[in-house]
Amino acid sequence: MDSNEFIDFDIGAPWGRIACRWYGSRQVRPLLAIHGWMDNMGSFARLVPLLPGHLGVLCIELSGHGRSSPYPAGMQYSVIEWTSIIRCVVLHFKWERVSLMGHSFGAVACNLYASLYGRDHVDMLIAIDLLTIPYKSSSFYINYLANSVERMLTPTPAPKLYTADQLKDARWGPAPTISKEQAHLLINRSVRQVPDQPEKFFIFRDARLIHYSLFPLGAGLVRELNRRIRNIPYMVIKASNSNFINDDCIPTFAILRKQNPAFEYHLAQGSHHVLISDPRQLAAWIVPFINKHRPATRWEHPGELNVISKL
Image (cartoon, rainbow, N blue to C red; front, side, top):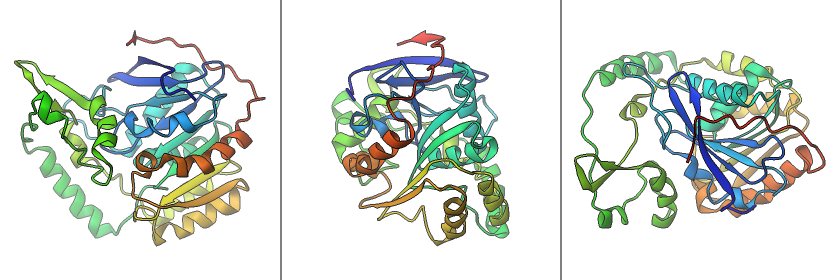
């Protein structure tokens, strides 16, 4: 797929705008790509060009990330709201079904969406280095939620400012293992100019994302949600140097394997952001998976591109 063949646009949401970038073909319904917590659509910039040319990829940015609108003041972020963003996109394009690819908490949002809507509405899911909503002990959640309330009411410090030259050496804090050049795929989506200091810039992230709600679920409810995912082609890729997919996930893996005959699991050598640092490794598994479950011979209307702005 040609990485230069894309269109940028925004679509409306109840809280503002969802920033979108549609790569490749607009003749069929695309693969919808959801980035992870504190990242943006730049996460997929090196992977997308390696994917099959017959299927477009629609990358979106979650609220408070990249160039999408943040939530109104007083609201808190959680994976539940991110699942509702997927639904907003599906309804906007009037898709009957959706093919999903998510990284990190984007993969969690995809998993939750599939558990809520099932095979009738999801026809493929690719999860990169996270599987389901993490679950902890009750005491952990009680302490976390109490501290989260306090943190939400604490003023956040002003962001670090950069000159244009300093910005060239900036790194992406949530992804310390990627190179400086790779980091700028993410930074370029989030850099902002200081309104009253045009020679200064800052990297925008909604500060409330630091205190996002974990949306506590017990192990039993997580497993029950995953029992609702049946007969969906489902690929999970774990990064070898990451612990986001761990032994706690074994019961969920067993459920998904049993109920989804086209389930695949792969171990990638690398860190949590391996989709940026070594996308060819992932493409070696993802490309045949897409070709098998969304082949070029299958035509489906992509939906109307009714946008509120083209960029």
